[in-house]
Image (cartoon, rainbow, N blue to C red; front, side, top):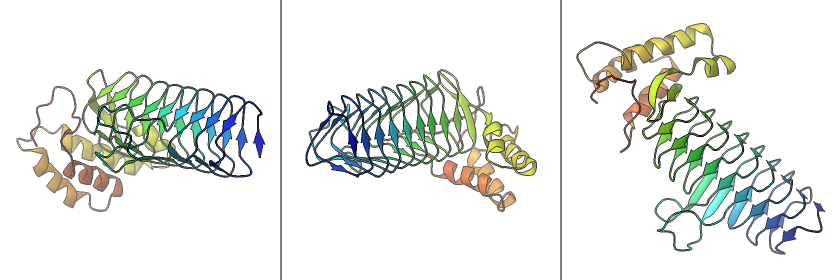
Length: 268
């Protein structure tokens, strides 16, 4: 174990022998650092925080401190961060609250760029990228392989579907479908994440079919509702797993509703 003499480590913290802790880091009593974790310097970790294997944390990140929620009363709650993540400078992540599951969960193989913020009770999937100063409000759910652009803000209780991409400086007040591309100061759906799908090995036929389904669901001139289109699409695209993901996501839409293309008057 390599611990700089200026670091302050609580004797009850659980630290694997392979962990490296640089200058002026602070690690609290209930923190668990797994194999291969590296704290570069000036990292502060508190609360019931567990960090998975080989995660690297850069200077001035602040993890596990009390959530920014006026209803929080000091109850025991958790922050669980997975393996192989990169957490850059000034990133903040907070534990859960009793209004949810008392837990904030971050997956594996994610990149959190400078100043990104994950609020209480969020659930962030695997291979997620949050660019500089991207912010998640409380209770946000982010699916695997989603990308959230710099300076974007996601409203509390919004869901971001897997493989979705959020444009920089966007305000996300509604759910974004899987594979969706959302952008704008009050974001609208601008299509599907074609570049992201190509990067992850989707072939041309799969992408074309997803585009076709998107157009049918959101851009059709038919005089019907999205609900009725969903039922048609469910039968037509039953063999396309990605389109089924989109359909199931729409069916499970919560109180926030979901992003639609600009200037389209669809009723659900």
